[in-house]
Image (cartoon, rainbow, N blue to C red; front, side, top):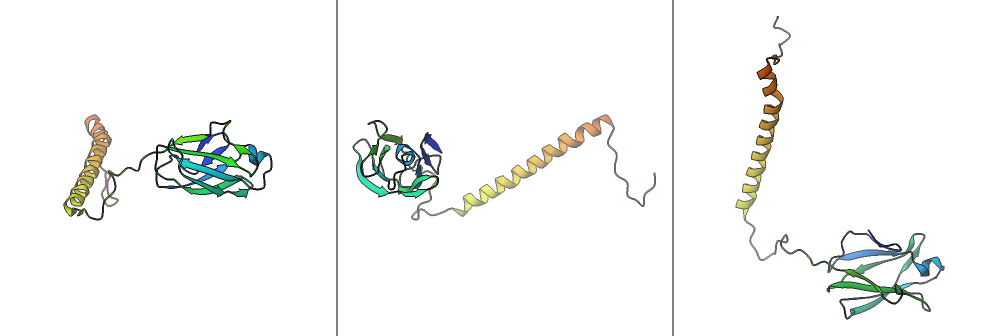
Amino acid sequence: MELTKNIFFNTDKLVENSTVKISYTGKLFKENAEKVSIHYGFGLNWENVTDIEMEKTDLGFQAEITLGEGDTFNFCFNDGNNWDNNDGQNYIFPLEKVQTELLVLEDEPVSLGSAKKLRRSYLWSKKVRLAVYKIITYLPKIISGNYKRKLNRNETN
């Protein structure tokens, strides 16, 4: 996923409490900096500020970061002397909340009845689809009279 022309993430969404790999090919990489660190925090107040030295590769500087909680993921880059902070505005991207509706908590009992209902509905949907296929395929042939039963080799015309 490319969010700006010089910053890439290995995911489509930035979600709280997940791990993301970030690649940087911006100004400091183009100026052949030997070391680059990412300076980042979360939310409008830059909470939980952290600095991590990034690994230099042929594809840019890369680092794996565990995203914290907050509305935004804020960061900038530093080579020890120079900063790439998006012209003083920093790089700021929204963080999405974890979807808890789909999670099964350990304390909640799992109903086997609901699994049986899902299986039953799945089987019925397969049967209905097969019936619709047969109707679409064979009904026009029967109505037009072009339906011929295949004869066994032992039978003669």
